[in-house]
Length: 584
Ligand SMILES: Nc1nc2c(ncn2[C@@H]2O[C@H](COP(=O)(O)OP(=O)(O)OP(=O)(O)O)[C@@H](O)[C@H]2O)c(=O)[nH]1
Ligand SMILES: [Mg+2]
Image (tube, rainbow, N blue to C red):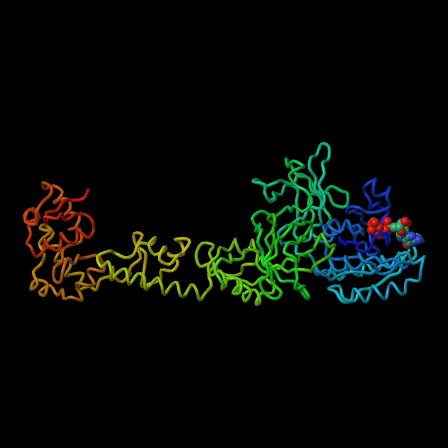
């Protein structure tokens, strides 16, 4: 199936033509038939000579109903532009064409109707010239009469050729079905209709509806008037939703593949063509079937920030149009550059932002997004419409490669600094590192740790520290053997020399956590600290240095620095009179 929207000035014969082609009545309302004028969108379809199906979204031409027209053409990629031979190019011919151009519609046909009333030549020439200036380019033209049927076979053949030109729909893309109608069917409940431009819908699918806490479920599907288990783009579809009240949704809402769209009320966009210098501060943004008031903040020569009155599921690269409802004027097309732009708080932020936007063209660009955002979850990028084809650095986090390298270097520096400042601690706690590097998730810290660093017991330190050179390991074992039963006696300096424990060896043993250094040439086994606290806690509090020395069965050489270390660690507290207490 392919879907075409009509376009053209009021009374130029759009609905008559659709009726003649399909045998169906596009003017659904009694009031429309009474007034001989389309007010809201109409839907009809027919089989083409090639056996393909064309579905029409018939739009109203009257200037009052341009918003309805825009809701119809928004999601449709092809247009049938209708101009009456006897009246020629008229204001809404121009406004509708401007809308198609703003939306970037690239496929279309010109039907010059009422050719039984006047020579179609001049209207054809003028219309083709106007259309050639837009995104539609040179389009085939057919003169027809909805009254006599003249030209209809040629128009059907032209529709067939147009259908063959359209790009294949992206069937694996997520669904974003812009609702153009909603109504209630007795016994079935709420039904919505729309043009499915990409993806597939199946009965039983769960879909997301903006503002709804819970997913909605597809209870039934119709396309071309028939119930179907599945519908694939491109298609006109009617979706019966289980358990969703009718007043929950209407035109401008969208049914979405869950988790694939970012609902945003702030977008940075590029204005198409020659942007008017005096763009009003408030306009209406039309995208899909939605129309939302926006506040416009100019940034660069052709870029603006739009604040939407309500959030919409927008993607990078979306086309939309801005219209001034007061002046009945399409202000121009926009292309969405960023659906999650940074706030512009600081002075000069807007100018800096304009420079960034000048480089963007609305084509999703993973490398660029990573450069600008530095670290972001894959899911967040996908929801912006940026396909992710890069390996996460950790979990589902993606990183800009240069930023990630810098973080790795910073981490090494932080760990080294921490080791200098806290030589007795076995590495830097992962959480402290996360904060120092301002990382949003601990898995990122863990992923940044590379040999010779490693994570042990929630801390990041040098892995080599644990693999002591063998002579040092042996020397430490001998210390353990000799001093294990008098843990607060430190080997004398000459004993350390005998054991082969010079300053370098002691340093390595300390980094490995095999020895505890209290002062130059004063080392204990590492468990001594906890043991000391236990012994001291058994003393009457407060206690003096000499009482501690005796209880620990050691010398001043050990007791003084040991107590000072315990003070630093907060295990003991020194009182003004130099006595201490154990902090519990
Ligand atoms: N003679 C003649 N009259 C036509 C032809 N096409 C449409 N008409 C008449 O023109 C009038 C308007 O036709 P519609 O089909 O309602 O026009 P429309 O473009 O759908 O109008 P809106 O939807 O209100 O914008 C009707 O009275 C039609 O009968 C044609 O090819 N020949
Ligand atoms: Mg009509």
